[in-house]
Length: 169
Image (cartoon, rainbow, N blue to C red; front, side):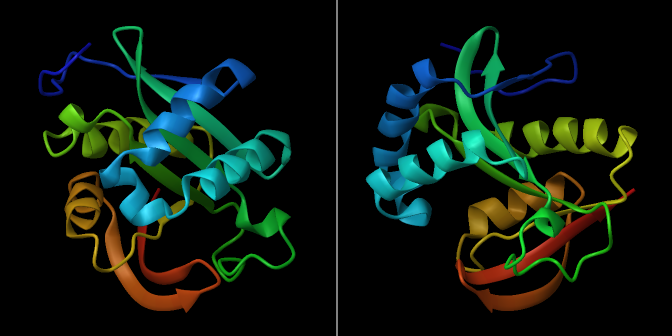
């Protein structure tokens, strides 16, 4: 299992979640550092299953050196009639990230993963990326800032309290 700090020469691989990943994702959702922010693991796994079938969302596993280390999804809030971020500019994509492996938390992988996926999505035409950590999740906020995201608003949405952060093209 990779445990070293991310480096400039390291690249993460993003691949679509498949049914074979659900057991691993279920274990990650039970990890205290994930469950603290995701809540009920069974409900979280149901959300991931729903995302696998939703045209608005692309759920992915992040791999490093061929080993799954994180869950990532990006979504188009404009494809969901009731999404609270439909007020963002057309073409905006939302992101969610959870490092699954506990020994890889807090050593730079979150910001490195987000920098890489953000660069790829912006290069693909996304004018704005948003991410919405709980304002109390200081570790996530720091990682997102290191990845080039800047806070622009606090909201309370159907998902709970959110510090809205954006990275513009």
